[in-house]
Length: 524
Image 1 (cartoon, one colour):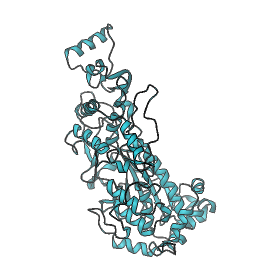
Image 2 (cartoon, one colour):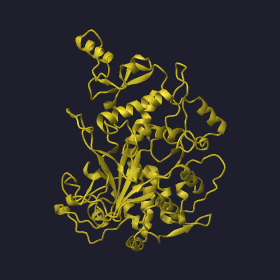
Image 3 (spheres, helix red, strand yellow):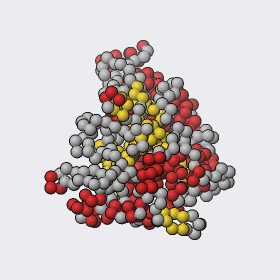
Image 4 (cartoon, helix red, strand yellow):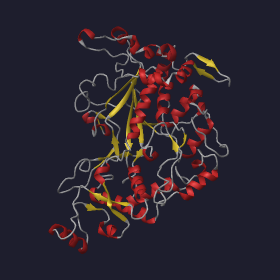
């Protein structure tokens, strides 16, 4: 791992060889273990290192594979082992059985999207050009992962789908993340097979004992994808983005600007709805042309605008925000996975996933075996608002992955309070734990100096954030209204051992050189 955390050594140690599974995880199925021995996943050639630990030769080769080679040699390779191709003169009849990825291969891919890489760095100004204090506490997490993330929200959650079922990949958090960071080699290139598998096993939460399954037709699969997508023996990584936490955090961040510079939050899907006589008079005056017209509904009403607390020249329309760029983290993760798959010599293919809302659901009568999300019906309206506010909202999987919205919180007040707690309490993931925050600094005193000068949301900012969130829930019966609680990119990434005979028959060897050497290196 790339960064260490300052402070005394952890009292707890981690032996990845004896790593406990998360509650609810079953042991690896016996047939899976047999498959791994058949493919050599646990008996690959190995070499001894200076510390006396034996590491498979494949891991050493992976650590030394050049980054520039991964960039230039990365290709989409679709045909998994065991699949026949009907393409006229380019047809191929496979004589192989599907070859699932080994535990080690999956563990490396899992760690790519869940691994903790050290502490983030707060390397920016705290005083604006006008001399006023700027926001210094935007992040939801201080510990970093392998992909850039808006406000370090780490809102992307991956599901892994293979022949053994559907799994949520849950990254380590809090104290456990610190223990892992301290107990394992700093660089992934120094990890043993047991290190990779132990860390990955901690992240696995079983969602289903069955592989995801849908009818092989539109609207579930595109025509050209239906044969090869979600094929036996393949492993799929499907990202979904929790927009609830970052939605609240972004509102808090915008409102922590100095007084008079905070934006007016508008519901641009709704006309102005006065709530008292004064507001009715203002609406009438605007309609008659003797006052300023108010085309959209200002959240908090005209009292907020007239108070001077908000900057009327700066407006934040809710409909414009959409995902607030929270989903961009998922694209970085997918690119990282593609480059890692190339480095390992696996076939990798990003393509259209089973479409929403089907992928959220499980309904055996319809042949739908998806992720099993709770879909929350919206409030009914005379005039329907645009999608997604008019559609059911995927809010979570009970007890496994839950958004920061009812029914998983009692109210939107509680949702905002949980964001505040996560950011600023001693047990939280961000600024309340001085030991974690001080990680990238040379001196704890420097970390303290930053926190003492950084602006924090005050009671008024928290109160207005609650008002905005409650308005959305009360008006639309869902949170958020302008984006789903869990957002899907509509794509997933499939890894496979390739149908090597097919590629050797039809394609230039330079297009699959890394993949051609995979079996000898990883399963020889």
